[in-house]
Length: 380
Image (cartoon, rainbow, N blue to C red; front, side, top):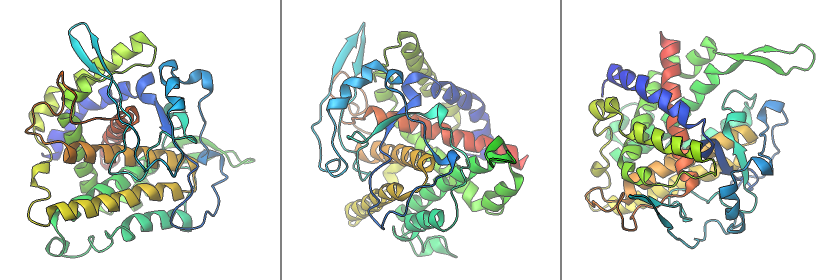
């Protein structure tokens, strides 16, 4: 897909995503911010005000979700597997799939555990927090180096690594570019002279140029990860159409279903991007299954690194976007696209998603879409 074609589709898709993430179903995310770092000793959390996360009050949590509170596990138990179940409900002539509880094979843990909290994402926006320096650098170094991606971003790299590893590097690099874009677009522009607190936020041309403008390959990888996630959303379309978007607010839930349908039926997306990423090209050859398992373990490590982030808000958005990317991987590499019953039917689907996975998937797509919009703003 050409960049100008993607820009046209963005004019339709970005407003839909912005509306979706405002609705109750998509603005509340369950996250555990208190699991220990598995890679190095805990060296404290950022004490800056902008690093903190505002937790939902009990009366703010959708009533339909509170019943899940008794079906949880702690951090250590989260990776040991949990019972799976599917609830089917029929509304009129529409078969609706309820949410299941199962482990995502691409993540290190499941967020439905004892220490998890509900967070209103609208009250905790992704932006610059002041978390930087050696600690922040160590996080990204662990993501790239400890997961065997540090040798890929070198001269003539296409000749020394397989296509699958290159794809994974571009996904991580693209997500990194998206986060950097949001930081540059929401940077402190004024501080209180007495307290030092940020008074206003705005775009920083300097930050954009340093983080992305001087590195066009990072912008290319941002486009790549967006198309990858888009492919996952499109492939899971039948499942998403039949999912249960229930929070107890009937009007808002009806609007959630309506907007999801509009997103999936977007003519500009379907016309300009019929198959933005072909997952059938992955894992071929005798070593395909072994390579898939190896990269899955690498991605689990990457998701586990999020527990080492020393800024609550950075950890929140890091975990959400890693879960969204893991959900995309789960969709693309779990279900055979030739199986007509796999993604949506009146039978139990082969693909089963947790509510939190769908929330993360749609919010990740919205974040990436907003990043592309902001890149266009900076470059024009």
